[in-house]
Image (cartoon, rainbow, N blue to C red; front, side, top):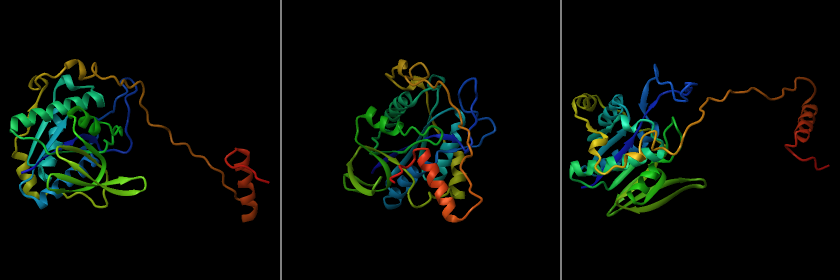
Length: 273
């Protein structure tokens, strides 16, 4: 029997993120929250492994405020068998380094509570509200286990996981031994939706709670805002500037000649004449 942990994050569902100019933090009031889409791909990868092996058990873990339970219940309604929320005021303000440290300690705690070992830890490649792509690899570093990033699909074979990985030149297949961490990007298919029966059952399922006092031996100097070496000085949404030149007069040849002159003048291309 294999066990998979999927790390998920609750993020704002918006393309236009508003920033509080005083605190440099996201304004979440009135904005719908969802499961981070890349984490949804990680959950789908776990679900596809379970489709082939019913003995696989999927756990979901989220670090966030109490309202993040909604994201975990969404995971339970899709394919997760159990869920845990790491939530504590001491976790607030954690950067990616502190977050990965907290999550790695929470993973160890879940293994202790469930009397299991995780064979695979799946994460989305990045969160859409931060785009750092750092937490998954840092969890692997904290746990001292191998990792593969930018996974598309995967398949279990004996004591190895075969991952189809996205690369700049296309795809490649890599084999990795258990335990391991894999981060997932968008494949060429959409994740499954929650069924009505599972959604109803998910509402009644208990979600395990993990606070700082449950994490034996955690170094509180390495968590929260004070334990985060990354400090955000300023966050803003850049203004979209309209530019370009429209040639309304003259023939196609004359327009092309004017464009070439502008490109040379602005040193975008070199005049070889």
